[in-house]
Image (cartoon, rainbow, N blue to C red; front, side, top):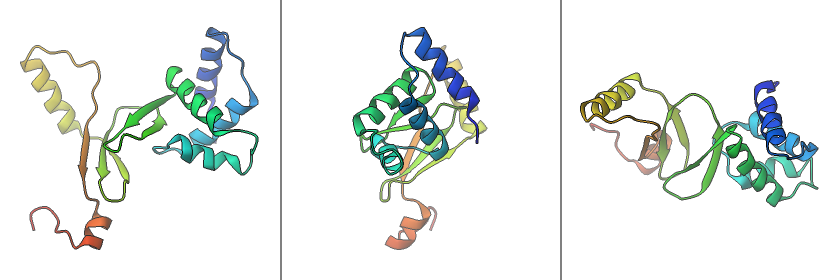
Length: 151
């Protein structure tokens, strides 16, 4: 899969900030984009290290920070405080399982509309927001014999 938009965005950012385009940055970007999801620096490092053992953890971590600055990636910190990175794309919200740590993305026009209505009613202009819901996923509830809502 080609990621021309992200590659060009990184190239523009590096040029604008007098930074070099390196093979290591290209490899890290490609691995990050191919993996998708909510990756930690450690996750990405583990994906890269087998094929590119000369790329160190610090390089991966610094490059992820560079992706955030270039607006290619977004840093997220959920309840556990661990920095995770995801591809910067259209707005979405998250469901986070407190037991297994899985993160589910979702979109809801009903929630977005309710937020706008609340903000409008208070004369408030929303510039950005994060909506995170914490609980137990279906798989973990089944393992714990945790009843579903309404049971």
